[in-house]
Each structure stands twice: as C-alpha cells, then as structure tokens.
Amino acid sequence: MTKNDKPKLISLDYFAAQKANVQSPLQEIVKLLSREVNRHKLDYHQLKYIFKAVRTKCAVDVPRTKQSLLERPTDEELGHFFKSIKNPIHSLIFETLLNSGLRVAELCVLEIRRIDFEKSTIPVIDGKGGKDRTTVFGNKLKDKLLIYLQGKNNRYLFE
Image (cartoon, rainbow, N blue to C red; front, top):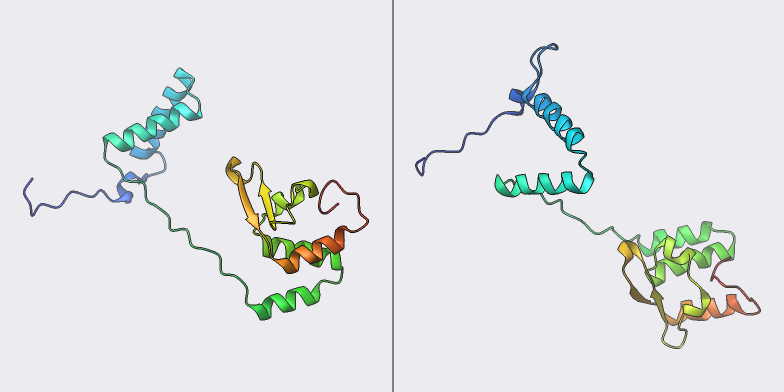
C-alpha cells in the first residue's frame, strides 16, 4: 500500500441481505457467534472480553460520546417553579436538591445524624457508582432545615 492509497471502506449496504432468503455477512457472523457462545457457555463478561480483544487486535476505535452538562434553569424559571409549589415541605425538598448537589436517591436515604450543620456539609456514602463524596450547602438552606427539624424526631431528613 502506498501513501496515496486510501483504505478500502466497505459500505454497510454490503452487509445487508439483498434478498429475503439470503443471509447477509452480518447475519452469518451473528449466527456463528451465537452458536459458539452457546457451545462454550460464555457469560457476559467473557463475551465482553472477547469483543474488547478483537477491537484491540483489529485496531477498531470505540467512538466517544460527548457528555454535555445540563443547563441550569434561569432564576426566573426557578422562581416560577417554586411559586407553583403549594406545600412548603415539598418546596424545601426541591430547595435542598437544588442547593446541596444531592441526587434524589441520595436525599431519600439521607439520615439527619449524617448532616454536619456546623460545617454545612453532607457526606454521601455509597452514592452513584458506589462512590463516597461530600456536598456543601449554604447558610440559607441550613437555617430552613434547622427550622424544619425543630421538634421532629425523624431518622431521615424527609419522612
């Protein structure tokens, strides 16, 4: 192969069956792989290893998807949202989510004893992906939470 030669790219149309009774090369590969997976009783992790090894051996790159950050609502949009909430406890729940960085599942299992009101921090144990982290919250939210918790003997923040 010379410098000016371009690698041959095979069109996906080549792999599609041209007639209903004829199997395409992709269909034949799927059939062959299915037979071998069943014959050797391969599990998911073994099959994943095989495909990774084939990608490496054949220099097939895995396309990376760009992960974009979600756009935070404007102050005006947030104002409309909070005005539409009639129950003050529901409003406090959303305010806690917004101002603490907690995920919904993390807030649902948040025990009051874990909140450090002096440092305004919340340790998240076994969060998304099994990871631990610490989130912080502001004084306004701290004051509202302390008022909400007065006279309550809850285990979880919101019960």
